[in-house]
Length: 148
Ligand code: HEM
Image (cartoon, rainbow, N blue to C red; front, side):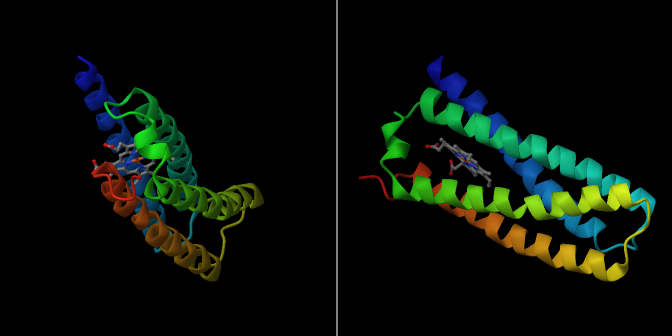
């Protein structure tokens, strides 16, 4: 039964995590298009889902530490786990800037120039690259790499 709960947490964690990846790629693709009010609206919506998925990944991730099949010390004594947390934090901080931009664009009630889209698109691409490190550390920590 305990294993079943662990599996449910794992499933929800994966759904949030894949949603996060989808939102980032979605924003990157939307920023490739011609700026328009409809694209701005979509960017805002995707960013809202991104916020929910990021919060969900954190909440369910923490739940897995305490209510998963492995003891919490399996993670807390592992620098690979803390590296994963640090990268998550860096991605969270990086994502503040695009969010501010999407809100500003929405408020200005004026379509941004292509150059502004390109700048944020390159930034989001960098964010995607950093984000990609998270599953790398996740897979390693899950297999006990770094555990002391
Ligand atoms: C800060 C929030 C997060 C916490 C506290 C957290 C915590 C955890 C925990 C405890 C596990 C279980 C590992 C095991 O089976 O022993 C796990 C697995 C996993 N996490 Fe996270 N996680 C977080 C965010 C993320 C994010 C944002 C991603 C995005 C890529 C991610 C990707 C994964 C993957 C792919 C696994 C499965 C690893 C495997 O079984 O090979 N996690 N996470």
